[in-house]
Amino acid sequence: NPVVAVVGRPNVGKSTLVNRFIGRRQAVVEDKPGVTRDRVAYDAYWNGRQFTVVDTGGWIPDAKDRAAAIARQAEIAVDTADVVVFVVDATVGATDVDEAAVRMLRASRKPVILVANKADNNAIEIEATSLWSLGLGEPQAVSALHGRGSGDLLDAILAAIPEAPVIVEDRPRGPRRVALVGRPNVGKSSLLNKLSGEERSVVDSVAGTTVDPVDSLVTVGGEVWQFVDTAGLRKRAGQASGTEYFASLRTQAAIEAAEVAIVLLDSSEVISEQDQRLLTMVVEAGRALVIAFNKWDLVDADRRWYLDKEIERELKRIPWAARINVSARTGRAVDKLAPALRTALASWEQRIPTGQLNQWLTALVQATPHPVRGGKAPRVLFATQAGVAPPRFVIFSTGPLDAGYVRFVERKLREEFGFEGSPIDISVRTRR
Ligand code: GDP
Image (tube, rainbow, N blue to C red):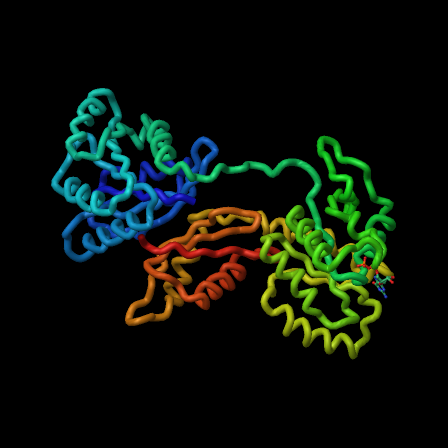
């Protein structure tokens, strides 16, 4: 998400304004002069678009002690922002502190929107025009408390961040799309037959959706699912399957077309390089994943022991993927597939509110800060979830983070919020 930093000296009404942006009362408290507050990030929505608001403490330039710390916080917030909302108290007019802030903002070269807050009535609004003198363009007269002018301000903010993503409220209605993939003879068509045969559940259509003729609509666990490119599965081995290259292209396309993939492995055989390639394809395509070990009826105690070791070794990189042991022949645990698919998809679409995410992250980086590199340790500032399907997070920091530290954050993120069955993408944005 684009980041909007709200900056201004203490008591100009920054928090009230942030409350306006986020549209509901969160634990944002009014400034008290001289009281340090950490930057806190929130999700904001306007006109179907989305951005992150960072609320800063009151900014006092060249001040000592706690006030200086607040100023630092605000400067960092400005550095990481795409656009700055600079708040001035219209009932007071421009002060020396405001003018010093303007110099800092100019130096940052960030787009700045000047807000004349507390313009509760026309008289103050007219008074506010004197703020042109700050040289930041037209002051936006706003009453954060009463809401006056805040819609126009939000329009101006969005105009300054044209890349703000459009929120897609609901995914289009229709069955969830599943890719059933696995190397030849692993039992894909047997499993599909089992799923569609047992429940007598192949359906021709679902109201209001169009389904590609190569796909199949199958009822599994009381829900209709769209298995993509089942035409590719039904071909008998050797016949018209093409070269491995084309088979793999087709598999890739099926994965891309799906929301969730079932990677079918043969538990009677070792996990092969081809199996690994399929898993990688799913992870790199950013799709939800369920791993099913087929032919479980052939697994005896001996094989089971070896398989456990193999899984530990071969699937270490995707500990988050659900694993189920099935038999397309006997029907064993086939009923576990639908719940696993649902869990994976829920993780895939999970959104963590920015406030909650940052509360957790602040505690985490306090308990386990980034190791020192070249005499300094980069500081994690805040994070935001930039998207879902799969969940994508952006961490803002004062410098590049070690890959190991990012993995640590991912592991802890999963411990805290779940995400079973879904890859997660974490990127790091440093101060510019
Ligand atoms: P596909 O190439 O992945 O579609 O695999 P098929 O469904 O054609 O199955 C390949 C072979 O494995 C066939 O001989 C199946 O009967 C056999 N098979 C599939 N599932 C199972 C299973 O769960 N247990 C056992 N023992 N054999 C299976």
